[in-house]
Image (cartoon, rainbow, N blue to C red; front, side):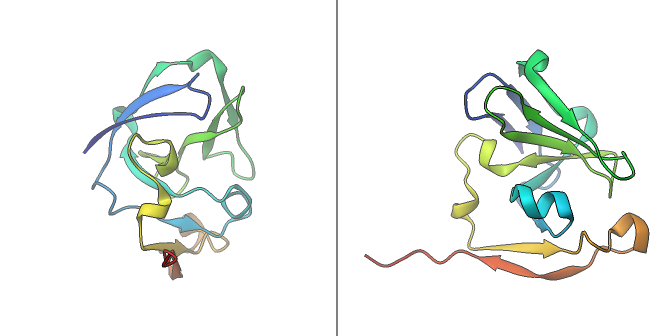
Amino acid sequence: MDVKGSCHCGSVKFQARLVDGLKTVRRCTCSYCRMRGAVPVSAELGSLTILEGAAVLSRYQFNTKTAEHFFCSKCGIYTHHRRRSNPNHYGVNLACLEGCSPFDLEEIPVVDGVNHPSDTGKLTILGSMKFVKAIR
């Protein structure tokens, strides 16, 4: 599935090919993802292209410095990251994709990032987050 996306202010624009559509969507419990609150989907490493704004992208790394988290230095929105759990994939912020919103999804799996798959050898689903639309 080919997608286009951008940060909030539009300075960073990109395109990517998602690995399996929206089927790879997830939340993570690691310290950074917990605070960031984003909902990423997977794209192959070579399939993400920055169309505009490469110069305004900032990179953040911590702990093992394997993952690379990218965000717009103007509006602060996280656009994508190179995954620690699979360095051949990017996690792309679903909320940055044209026509997509995390609130369009009824349920999002939550993976154990505190006990990271790269440390334990397995990806553990802890539960899910559910969005229920209010009836008006």
